[in-house]
Amino acid sequence: MIDEKYRTVAPVEDWLGAHRQLWSPNTVRGYVTSLAQWWAFLEQRDETAMWRELGVPAVAGFLSWLRNGRTVEHALTEPEQAPEAGTLEARLAALISFYRWQEAVFSVPVAGRLMRGTPRRAPARGLLAHLDARTAPAPSSLVRVRRQRHRGRPPLLLPTEIQAILDGCAMPDAMVCEWAGNLRPTTTASGARAAA
Image (tube, rainbow, N blue to C red; front, side):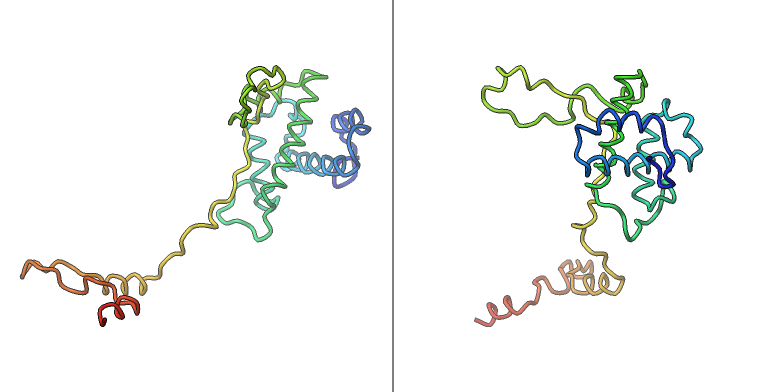
C-alpha cells in the first residue's frame, strides 16, 4: 500500500518488496511517504501513465510542488509551513533510489536522465587516496534542493529612513566649490573624542 488513499501502486510495491528486509521500518515509512507524494503529484498532473518517461523537469516540479504546499508548482511567496531542505532531500533521495532500481531491474530509463556521471563536488581526499581503488566517483543527481538564502539579507529601508540618511550626508555645493553638510558622523563616541 503506497498512496495516501491506501491503494497499491505495483512498481512501488515491487521496489519496496525487494528492499523491505534490508531497511529499517522508519526508512520504509519514509520511502512510502515520498513515493506516495510523488504519485499524488503525477496524478494531479495526469501523468501517472508516463511514470517511466519522466525526467528532470518533472522531478524539479515535484520539489517545487512540495515546497509550495502541495498545491501548485510555482508560487510567488513561500508558504508558512514550507518543508525543510532536509525533508526535500529525503524525498528526492527516495525517488532517485526508486528509479535507479527500476533502471537496473526493468530498464526504465528515468534514472539515466536524472543522474550525471561524476559528482558535482569532489569529496575531501587523504594524502594517499589516489592509491585506493574504492574511491571511484559515484553519479550524482542533476536535480538539487535549493537552500533558502534569504535569512542573511539586510532589511529593506523605508522611504523616511532613506531620506534621513540622505539628509545626514554631506553634498558638494557647486556655488562655493566646497562640501556642504556634515562630513563626520555624529555619534556619542566621536563627540566624546572631539570634546577631548
